[in-house]
Length: 193
Image 1 (tube, rainbow, N blue to C red):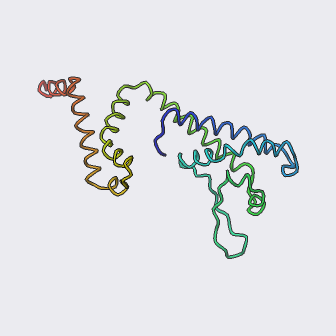
Image 2 (image 1 turned 90 degrees about the horizontal axis):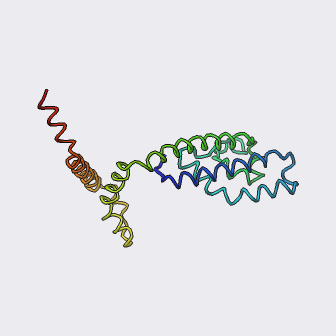
Image 3 (image 1 turned 135 degrees about the vertical axis):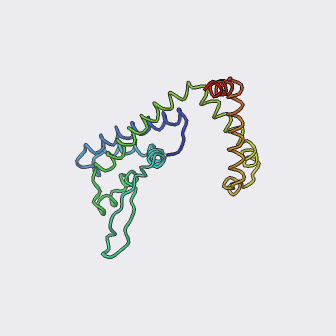
């Protein structure tokens, strides 16, 4: 799972909830291909698909199922269950059921709700914001080079750059502990034993 801000998690949760609501309405129709109301619901769902697919991928669900190829002895094919909703021939060809996307969406919504709760706690935690600032300040030279158009991908993977980032963060944490008096308190506690 990749790190996301509170607002990004909130937007993704709203997107998934709306997509799920529309999908439940869509699968409620028995004749979907020729039914005008079903096609209208499907049309409302289409703009939400890219974010729904990306949201599932970001939390490790991926939304993929593996099916045997239609030709005997052919390769197995990975089908994205969210995108397959809009490809009727794929649904028929691989016998995809309506519950698979629904289960993935339900699980994703639960995970995003938990993530939103954690993000709410972090939103009001001053130490979290201090650590975020220190992390940003440590990565500032890399961000400047990236903004200038320099390819920094290799540098970001470098051991030296990673050690630099860790060293800057350790120094900042030490300075915070020194400034807050935490180090003096620890030394007094050690000396009194």
